[in-house]
Length: 321
Image (cartoon, rainbow, N blue to C red; front, side, top):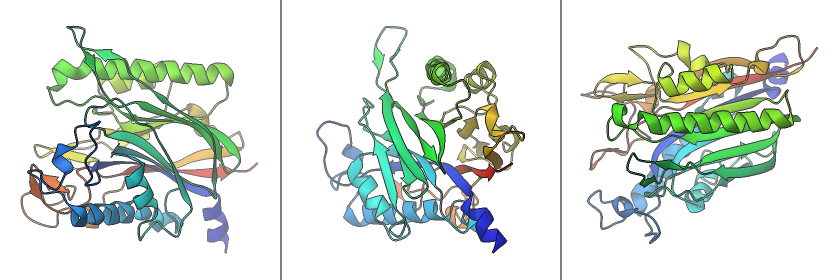
């Protein structure tokens, strides 16, 4: 009985890069050619439905062992459109929960956006906004990348703000793209400043696939400039991360927060724990990639897994004086 009472005031907040959550329908406004039935990847309705099923399964189990309920708030990356989100919230493992979602079309050339799922029973959405990143190359050419999704609402009656990110990738190499992520970091700092100007005591959660590790310059700038708490720093190790590149673990997926989630003397939602959700069912069981995220594709080869990233999450508990 006490456990159930405790769980009713404890909430999981998660972030998950879904690895190309595309449908199989051609959208002429974006470059979705890899995820059409005629593509080299042979994407089709059956594979899409499997992807929806497995993504829903993964989300439903984040933090479930601790709280006997799925996450209350989930930030997502690499989502194509509202159609896939509608399918996701109606999928086998999520349909019994009352999830709403928020997503905006971003200028990203591939049409992969960030999105936000929320349990309507516990979270009341007040407003949302997409913030465009205006990043240019050294030659002045616009880099069309993902927007930042800005969310404001009430979790268990307490107002919180969330900024959901998917910062520019390292495809050209980290040394040549680092300035793009610094630009994104500076933009997030400016957004936090704007929130705090309206309410100096505002609680803010910043989550995303930052394409940088906790100790990289862009994350350190964000953390130190706004005195944020980053519980992911202690999770980073040689044997664990949220993704694996060239047999090395990385922790690009992170959740940071303002320090007022740590102040024990005040009432309200407090930080309880953070973790990487790397349960065995999300991994390759054997072979070359054993223990790594069980991917949907490796290159153009279909594997039928979940994602090339593990979800990360924090848990918040209401502290009553």
